[in-house]
Length: 410
Image 1 (tube, helix red, strand yellow):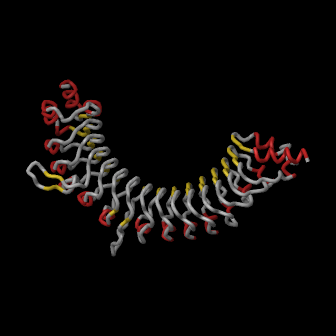
Image 2 (cartoon, rainbow, N blue to C red; image 1 turned 45 degrees about the vertical axis):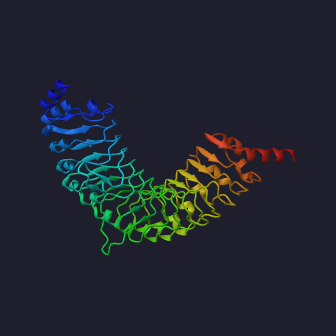
Image 3 (cartoon, rainbow, N blue to C red; image 1 turned 120 degrees about the vertical axis):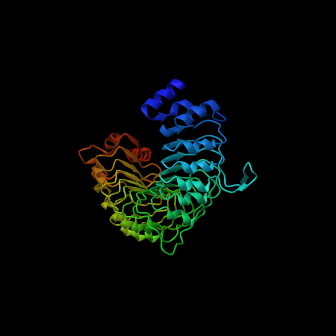
C-alpha cells in the first residue's frame, strides 16, 4: 500500500479506484486514513463505493484538491459538515445509500433534519450530484444553495413534490426525478427563471396528473423530455415552445387529445405516445417532418391526419392496437420506412402502393379482418404479394394467406 501511495505522490495525483472500492469496509482503517491525510493536497479522486461505510470521517475536509468523490452503494445516512471544505469538488456520487428525510440526532443529541449539511454551499465547484436509490421523501433544501450544479439525479427515491426552489439552480442541464412518487411540481415564481442550458428532464414513472403552467417556457433549450408512466391527462399548449426538443416520451398516460402546438416541434426525431387514449391526431401533427421513430400503439385512433404521409423521414412506425379501418393513405411516400407495425386494427384491404416501401424490413399486419389482396399488386414486377412480403425479414401474413387459400377454393 505504501509503495502505491509513494508512487501516486510522485505523480502528483492519487486515484484510489481499485484500492478501496468493494472492499467490504465498515470504516476507513486509521492507518490508511493517516497515509491518505499525508497526501491530501494531491488527492483528486477518491472511490469508496460498494462498501458498508456508515459515515465519512471529518478528515474528509482536508482533501481540498479532491475533484471526484464516489461513495455509491454504502450505508451512509448523512454527510459531515466538513464536506463544505471541498471547494474543488466537481462530482459527488451518493447513490444507493440510506439517506432519508427522517430527523436524526447527532452525537451531541442535536436534532438534524437533513442528510446534507448547510455547509455544502462551500462546494462552489460542484457540478454533478448523484442521489438516486436512496430513501428521500423531500429534497434537502441545502442543495438549492449550490448554484454551480449542472447535473442532478434523484431517481428512485420517495419524493412526492418538486419544490419551487429547485428552479433557482439556473445552471442545470440534466435533471432526473424518475421512479419517485411525485404528484406535484411547484412552479409559481412571479418572475420565472430561465434555465438556459437545460437539455434533459426525466419525470417518468411518477404520479403526475399535469404539468404546471410556465415550466416549458422556462426550459426552452430542452432536447429530451421523458414523462412516460404518469397520469397526465393533457399536454400544455406551451409544449410548442420547446422547439429544440429531439425526444419526447409521453407514453402510458391518460391523454385523449394533443395540442395543435405540437406541430411546432420541428426538431423532434423520436415521439412516443403509445398506451394512451388518443382518438384523433391534430392536422398540425403532419408538420413533425423530422420524425424518424413514431410510436402510436395502444390508443383509440380511428384515422390519421390528411397529410400524415408528409412525415417522410420516418423509419419506424407503430400503429398497432388502434381502431384504424383503412390502411394509412399515402404511406408509400414514406420511402425510408423500415419497420411498420399495424397489427390489431380493423383494416380490411392492403393498398397496392405498399409494394413501393422498398426499405421495409419489419411489416406486421396480423389480427386485421383482411378481405383480399389488390390485383395490381400481383401485376407488379414482384409476381405476387406473397413473394414480395417473403423478402422482408420478419412478417406475419397468416391472415392474408388464409384469405388467399379461400379465394383459390372458391
